[in-house]
Length: 98
Ligand SMILES: [Zn+2]
Image (cartoon, rainbow, N blue to C red; front, side, top):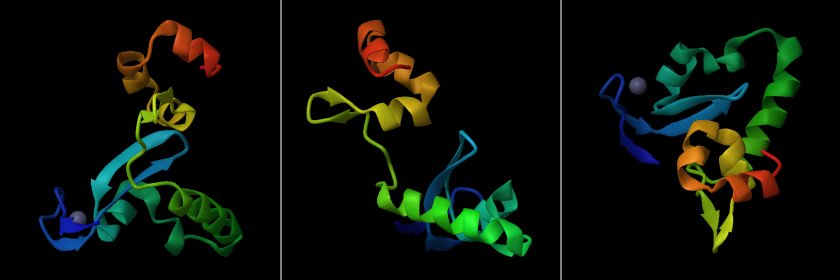
């Protein structure tokens, strides 16, 4: 998504990321790297792992919706366990195996 980065206030392609279960809020590439998401510039042994992760993330929408149709979205619950408790009932969470 094109827009103004909330961190550095520069215009750029804004992205949110989930790295190792930690949600990194929407920001520009530079700030993502700053936030420790800069595996791109890291050692080569992690690059394959990174590109797999990136492909998986690109496959998702930038923002994961809590519901798909009227079904609870398990990806959302896994990505945002704190928010999931607000969105979903205990039964829904159990059904998703959360
Ligand atoms: Zn920025």
